[in-house]
Length: 202
Image 1 (cartoon, rainbow, N blue to C red):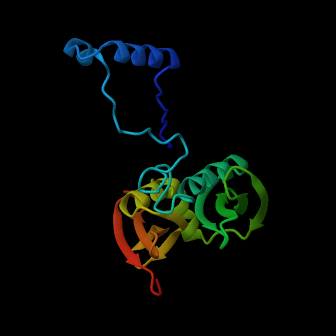
Image 2: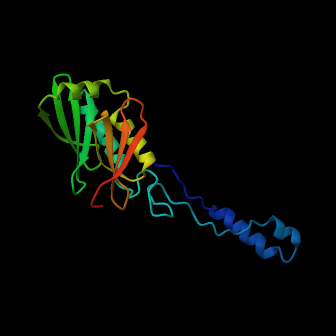
Image 3: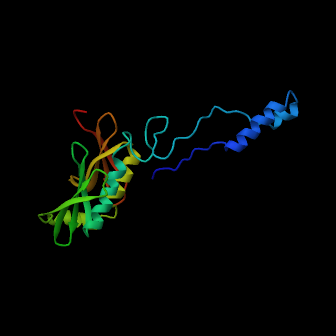
């Protein structure tokens, strides 16, 4: 969540009084002791401005994608009653697609870049029985798996899905860490990180 920051400025009246006292105080040590010290701390960034490292606390390493992706999952589940099991973004970052398992099939929900506006839905074929069981029985949700992965490898969400690996189904979350895409595997039962792989060609 974006942290709230405010600028603090000395009120105009108080500033005028302070300057007047400083001018009349002469060399009296007591006057100098009572005068506020000038600082060079600067002002904190306003809400929405990047910190000194050029990054925005609310998102990942590139500062633009992670939170909208999580918001897209939330919005998709408000649109379609079911369980989200995959999310991906378009190459130009203009849309998100969230796959939701429903009671009688699956629906792909397309959303805008902010993840707040549904652009359309598309009914898909029903899931394979073993995938449906894995989706419905997973104690760790898609959004929770993304949170875990981002905490392990800070960056921007690229895509995430429930994958069938040799050890069984687990969440695979792809993160752009600024230098390439990294796959973080998260156990669907415990939420533990069980693997980190850098994609070839990064």
